[in-house]
Image (cartoon, rainbow, N blue to C red; front, side):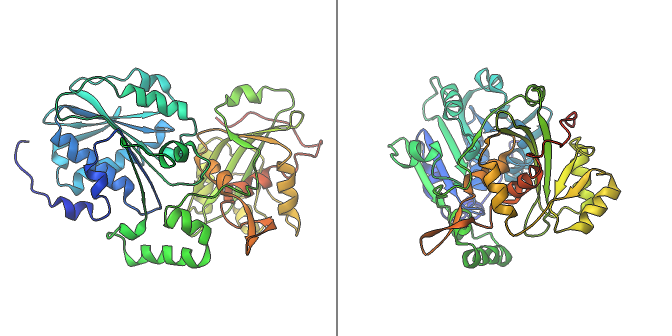
Length: 418
């Protein structure tokens, strides 16, 4: 374990992050487009610096704990391989954590959906010095961030420092991150905006995706390509909010209905499935689950829905794909049916949903992103009476699900999944 490993660090990290790498202030806040290296660079910084500061431990935070395994845990494990030090690290799945074997230092993983796991956090050896908020845009409650911020406290040995790193895609300028860190940064805060142009590790096919986006979808390119703030003006739905609610408690209300919708996708667009509870009397919609994945076959779609326990529910799907609907019926979604489509169906569905207060559970991360970016289209600065054809896959699924909710003859709620 004590043998030396030589690594050409600049060659591993690449360009664009020199200031990020050397900054030792309290906050490093990086908004960036997709492919901007913000997450891979942060992961390598943590691995490299924990090996350098042998009393330092790191806390990695996401809004929902169970998203770590396929994101930050895997990203940090990749970093040990990229830096040729994987033999010095042990990554366990239960509990999800990483250990630097020569010293016993830990990388701990927590979710804001379990506040007690963060406020009571302690380390066995050394000090809790650093925290990383990945996909920080999903942290809608600034108070939740503050609680973690306050947990990184106490005196440290000489040359050690406390630091919190936040990385995210800047979906909406209305987020508290902009006002707190970007509008008035102080000397203890480093704010950066990065994009794919600083990533020399991308292939020509990756670059091609961004170039096509630049030509065909300038709004998405501005956010996902260049890392600019999403402009929230002109939201189609300004009647939504993130809210942590108890699905079982809501479902016990008199007259509550469960409504499910499905929008098909494959290569370029994701397949989007949405699960909601509707209270017609109070004019409230509670969105409690989602599926949002590309490259799903019809068999995959059935498996995803069946795994979540919704196979027996009534599902309203995009009527443009009757063959897919028929195949899903044969696979086991016996109550799936096609949504009605017509020249005015989009606007009619939008107007109906605008009459409701819509609450989105924090676990529905992609739904929140779509609500935050679904705006009215414009031409030459003039707002049009139609929405953009983007950030609408889950929202289309919601329209399909709720198309009959004003029909008083619809059957009321059955038990919700499992």
